[in-house]
Amino acid sequence: MPAIEIAKILTMTPTHMKAWRLAGLGGALALKDVPVPQPRPGSVLVRMQASGLMSYLKAYVAGELPHYNPPPGEFTIGTNSVGVVETVGRDVWHLKPGQRVVLSSHFAARDNVDDPAQVLIGLTAGAGAEAVLADWPDGTLAEYALLPVEAVTPAEGLDHIDAAQLAAVGRCIIPYGGLLRGRLAAGETLIVNGATGAYGSAAVLLGVAMGAARVVAAGRNAAALEALARAAGARVSTVVLSGDRVADTRALRAACDGGAHLAFDMVGQAKDPGSTLAALHSLRRGGRLVLMGSMSAELPIPYTTLMLNSWEILGQFMYPADAYRRLLDLLRSGLLDINPIKPKVYPLAELPQAMDAAAGAGNLDYIVMRP
Image (cartoon, rainbow, N blue to C red; front, side, top):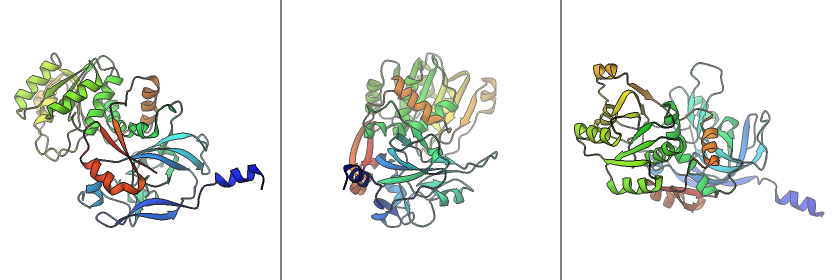
């Protein structure tokens, strides 16, 4: 057989692959042999290189997060990842086989309407978006993944970054959406509340990359804050929160030299709004507060104070469609340094151990699956 024919056979896409399949929240999770998805119009088949794990994936799988709305039936789990385009479906004009890409789980319906349905592929559907997730149920914890072209972003010019390290942009993309929403501008002062969490730490690194003159990292874990400040550089200072709203406001304002232009709130599962209110009251006149965390308490808004100071409070879910392109531009330019986020790599077969590691990972640790 001619060498060219042998090479063609060796590079053919296999018919089957390994994938982690979940039979509903709280159901069985198993590594199975399943057919490799076939490209369809508007889709991209990607050979996976690295997939980052969410810290709460174990709880999600166990059915301990009932507010999540998963795909119907059995599905492949997994969210933001890095891979190489294997092939593309009809109506895909710019992506080509062999291109390195990053994958986003966030996908909005293509319909040209005021409020298109949004889902997180391989994870959950928003209200009224169940049909979209039923059409795109499968995530990235597999050897191959098929995604809508809108969820696939070229990553050229980053070949010097290992796939496991590049996967750390998946840690950055969510807080980047919030900082874009808050209109963070070069030279401004930024407070990050919840800076000792995974996304909060990424927000500190992003604040530096986006040109903030001063980034105040706020949280309760002094050691984690100090490690973050060392990693992020001289423009970062820290405030260890006490839980006393008045005292914390005073400390934040002092660290900001009078007040912040933008406060980014990424607190996770907080039952007390005190730190969020401290961040709000630390704003200078005309300042903005962006809410992206998962606080379960109500946030009492000081109506008159808000009005007199011309403050804005902005909620943000995920990130706009062009955010991954802009984030990769920051990385290519050298402005964003993701090296402080240290990946720990597990083979695909060791997902149970990796989920345990992700649940206990530090704020600058990142658990990555590699097929």
